[in-house]
Length: 433
Image (cartoon, rainbow, N blue to C red; front, side, top):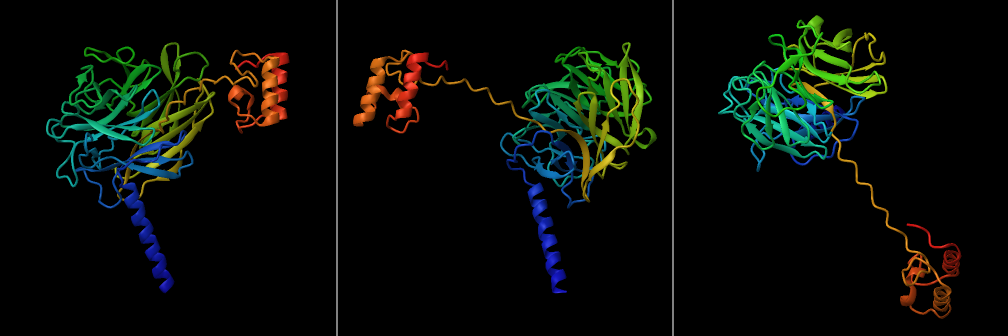
């Protein structure tokens, strides 16, 4: 009996430590390249509710092992604002990786916990919508809080090119442009007010929507920052689908995206749909079963695409991380079902997923030319007189002052081997740096 009590105490202590660690909003560890990031709402203690819950970015390995949890602020701290989310809004929490690969972008509400009443019904003027930017080093920036974005409705997603320019989408106000630290934004188009995912592929801004005729569409040309843009549905994409996140790939060997995967959380219970670009139109290329799938990202290796997807369940209060490897290639039908990698704990829910951000590649160091052994006066050649100087230093133990260039290993003396190296340099010329 005593053994059982001890084991129970250990389990409770471990659970408490996990909760404390996952609730921390301090500086996290850097992300590991190749890992996944999931938007999670709920701390595992308080029941999920539409009045708001804490938000975390959970880092997972591709095999589904939890690495760390980064808590977003639930209270103001310096320039950072709170970023919380509705615990029941399945459409919120889509993630995107900045096109330079350095940041994860997400959205939420500038509200403190515990909340009261539905967050999504609040006015953005009184409860601004927060945009979060989390760097590859684990640093969190929630200084952007918009008073004109997703007014009276759900903020859903954000994307960036460089961590400074931001594009956001929500259930009201359409797709918008702003910059880090701003409080207002520019509505780029009035073609669709209700946006789900915003993302950038191959230098083009795309959105998904489940309203009017818009499903997966381009916004203007490139990455526009001014009003008056047109939102144009991709030709061939049926208006009957119910898209959330999407992922483009280039599989045909010619420049430009030609394969599209779409997370549809409703059709046949949820599926990832594949489309191929043929003759300027997107043609259906099979489906992958994935219950109530919401978030989606992928990794392309040659003509193989490894997909990762998330689900929040029908009520938005659960969580599943899926994976599927599509080896069929360009313009080939895919079929099958996604496999489960991880599930959310009680009082937690998954939303979107993206790849872990990475830092810039370290600069290539400029090679420092090696000194020419025996070149006492630095003119890049070794003379007989300089060799004799080295011999004198070696024989009588004189100071190196006259020819420090002879001391190759920097041990304060001249050896026979160093003299022989100098002789070789005199005969064959100094090596090039």
